[in-house]
Length: 116
Image 1 (spheres, one colour):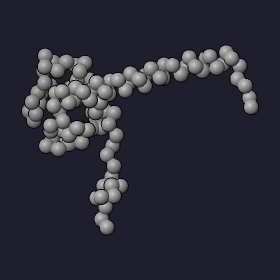
Image 2 (cartoon, helix red, strand yellow; image 1 turned 180 degrees about the vertical axis):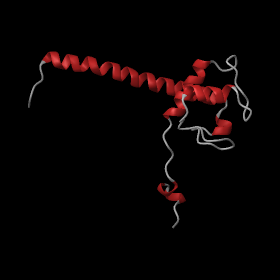
Image 3 (tube, helix red, strand yellow; image 1 turned 60 degrees about the horizontal axis):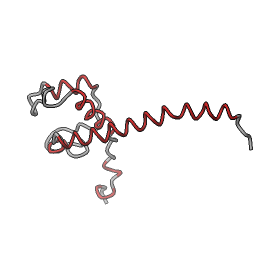
Image 4 (tube, one colour; image 1 turned 90 degrees about the horizontal axis):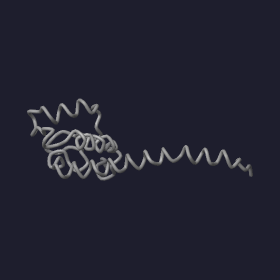
């Protein structure tokens, strides 16, 4: 078994800390974004995971934030949310949440939906 020098272990540990903080921040913003998605009742039309329903699927989000903001602020398809009603910061958290959602499985990968 090879033993690493103590200095190298300290450096490796210090390099790991920022990655853990970014992961925690990402998780926190995703959780907060989900809360806001629910608070602003986006789920009523877009489903709880943004997978669609009465409105289009919005997750996983493929638009850059600026395009998403334009859709939310200046729409004629759904109620528009002004910055007074939904801050840019909260809108970005919702966008982060939608970007974090995984692709849904293919129909053929869902046993209950496969042809028998």
